[in-house]
Amino acid sequence: MQMNQYKLQVDPEFEALIPAPESDDELQAAVEKSGGCRDVDAIIVWGNTIIDGHRRYAICKRLQLPFDIVHMTFTNREEAKRYMWQRQIARRNLSDDQLAMAIAKCAGDYPERITPRMRTMAQEMVAANAPQCAQVVSGKWSLSLAYGSWLRATGRAKPRQEKHPKTVPAPPPTAEPDPLDTALNESAAQRAAAADRKLLKAAKERIASLQARVDMLSAPLPRPAPVGPRVLGTAQRQAWGLSVLSDVHAGATVAPTSSVCWNTYNPEICRHRLDRYFESIVWLIKDEKSFAVVGHCLAVLGDLIDGHLHDDQTETSEAPLVTIDWLEPYLLGRLAHLADELGPDRELRILWVPGNHGRDTLKPRAATYCEHSHEWALGQRIARAFADHPTIRVHAPKARDVYTSLFGRVLHGTHGDTVNYAGGVGGITIPLRKAYAMWQLNQPSYLHLTGHFHSQLDLGDGLANGSVIGYNDFARKINARPEEPKQTFCLLDSKYGKTKVSPTWLHEPTEREREALATAAKRLEAGALC
Image 1 (cartoon, rainbow, N blue to C red):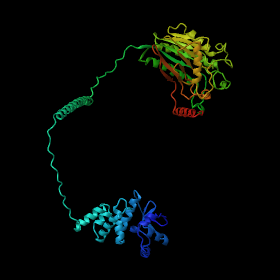
Image 2 (cartoon, rainbow, N blue to C red; image 1 turned 120 degrees about the horizontal axis):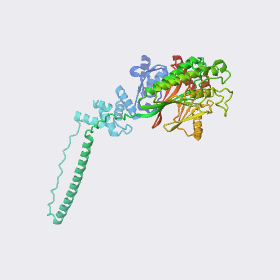
Image 3 (cartoon, helix red, strand yellow; image 1 turned 90 degrees about the vertical axis):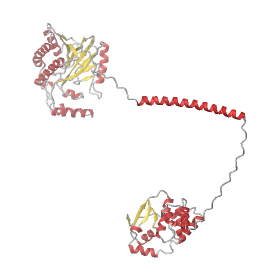
């Protein structure tokens, strides 16, 4: 690596190790002739400290000449010093005395502890130009080993003197053994032999125990007995079908805009979605294989018509009586057809309560709520129409709540407009839970059925229904989660209760509607409205 302006560090201890000549004139002339210090004359450094080339570095800095540096790595300073002495020995520019001292320092683990004897051996070998010096410099031989090899090679080693064998004195004559000592020794030997036999027996038992454990662990595992498929019982438990119909908003019109996720709705689309709803009930019951469905309960929970609840609805919705004029014969025909599809052995039980959109007053009235509801009157006419039907039973009380019992479990149905919710971040779950607690005080029920919020939820002891109209400005106003038009279906097992809860899809959304619904759901989770 060439460094013109690279500043290196000079360690005084390292610099003092190298014997300096009386004059640098000859070295300076050689550096000037070569144009600096390059290749073999490069400055050798350890980190940023000069190891070899102190004089050449000073000359290059003084004359502003370029120089190369070579980086070396050492484990400690002693290794760096030994390397410096080896470099000096290789240059052959030392006096005999300096060369002997360098060789002696290369040979010791502690170069600062050079003894006079070591210096004398090195001087004798340097004076004779002994080839063993190279072994010392390379670190292969110690100084004493090289010196002894040189003495033997030159015939100067002293012959070894044979050592006189040691005279071994004759053993003293043995005395006759004492009988008591002999008996004691024999007794001790017997006790030791008995202890050894006991230890040997214990060792054999331990070995046998370990061997048995090894055999047990190394033995192949027994193959498990084959397990065949479990034969389930062929008997079917009885169950009731349960479906909810609410928030149809017949007569309403929804124009496809980004604010309502491109949902489209009008009376024609309303009839099409209701057709799919009633057809889905028949398909779900006839396709059921796990249970014997003995009847179906249809909970009609209000807002069948859109009405003129607000002033702006007079411009976008049909008049309530116009809607009822076509909705009533439609429902009569569909309910009769549903009863025929279920068959003569299955009961069709209809639970009917009015919603808030069917009233003809500006505000709901507590005492005369039903008297001012077009939907309650529609329910009464439907009940009278099927009064003599063999399988249809209509429960349309003059109240906001309706109750029935299936397999001894009480079901409670209400529209849900009495639940206080204004679009909080917690959703409708918390308000519904509070309402469930209050309703339980009036009439303990197994399952609560509600509509109104256009959001389908299964809360365990309650089912919140979706809508037929789909996502609209009302759902957007209350921060309801954007969802496709759907209603709720489930089975009521005679033994375990509610099971197989599933939506009934009423509309095949377009690709544009799917993308809008997905985008609106993401924005709602992020805290923005669609």
